[in-house]
Length: 234
Image 1 (cartoon, rainbow, N blue to C red):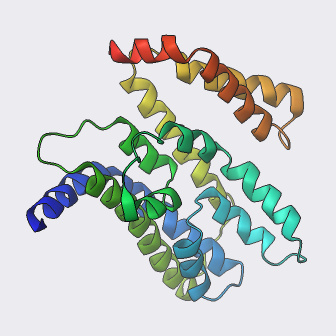
Image 2 (cartoon, rainbow, N blue to C red):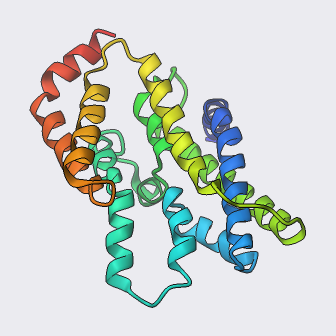
């Protein structure tokens, strides 16, 4: 059993090394951003452990000092993280039978974890459940560690935080480009781009997220069979 766990951990660590670099920097940016906003060093650590929301955490920096508005906060969080509904639907089969691991796999889902767990082909001898768990856990630990370092640095070194919240946008752009380069058939990616641009033009920058996700969900469901067939041919 121990050998199985260790093998899955080593394989997961090898796959998440690029995320270590990205999340280390992003987590540091978040910790510095929180510190510059006047929050105590323990708060970003707590949020990174309990929320682990990436871009949502950056938005929370401006939400926390505001008036208590739970409905508004819920709607904002849902709009930002609604893409996880699509992730969750596509991972139903892969996470089936995960037992006690499943609640944490659901909680710890993020863009980078989804990218690995949804596309990796595991060799013989690597347990699927433990691999998924370690990818999810390592990615969160990278983020938490970066947050801690950033919080400490923010306490002792003054930083100009203008534009620092753009790092998540840059990260998403890099992930998209990596996925595009890996694909031989770009149907799903094109659906995402067209849906985003179309809804942005129709609904504006403040309200296009949910319509975009709904549009993508409908189109992906409508063209599911040809997309899956093209993916099998890669």
